[in-house]
Length: 320
Image (cartoon, rainbow, N blue to C red; front, side, top):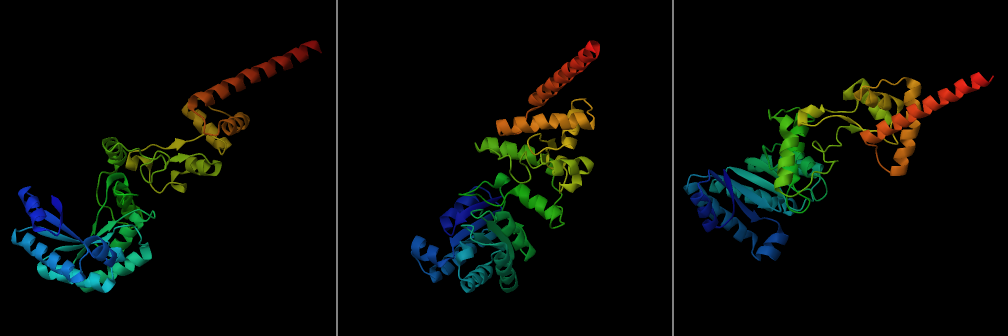
């Protein structure tokens, strides 16, 4: 259990009184924060962090030093800050992209330099203001960072932080490093956190959104029907989801046949194409994909019309 603190001894003492095993000690390192927010100097920052780390270490705590707004700090001062904290006994340095201004290539370069010059464990704390929290966190790991801050569903200040489920699955399938977690519980976990935090999970949310394995485009659906790996990086069951064939204006004949097969109805190619015409027309009118009940209604209308056409043909033969 790690308690978050300002670089203030009374904060750290409160954490100690709570029985934590470790503390994160945070202080601003960018000039805009030092001058505008703290109204102090760089030397004051160095002195404060040294004093706070020393106090924590004397109480036998594991210490992570947080370089707040590190992404906007002068790199030389950031290195000096890290070395200063290390000399005071810090166990790791937390690099904070506090307002999410970094991009992965720059992140890699900065973290690689910190790893080489400071020689402390580096922790990544990234924000998603420009939609790159997960990418920046992974770039940091690629450069040598060994810790990542994550939150379920990416919850956090403003646009949020690196999402736990995104980081884990990206590390597994892009970074080829399986953390051994029960990923099949991710959707359940995301729903629990969403409920507890009074938030919703967007259907397009990476990894756990219900649309991640929903296929409508005829080309995509056809590929997935033949082999799911054509349009899926991993199986839906791996994150607690299920595959869906969404039927709408972009669907193709194979999607229609496959969808009705789920209902226990086997269509031939002509029937599938005939129904597809009505499906696309209805979807365009409603401006959305169709529900199962609507598909069955279209199918029933098709059967009724087919029966009427058959009767008309029979009547014509009788008349002749």
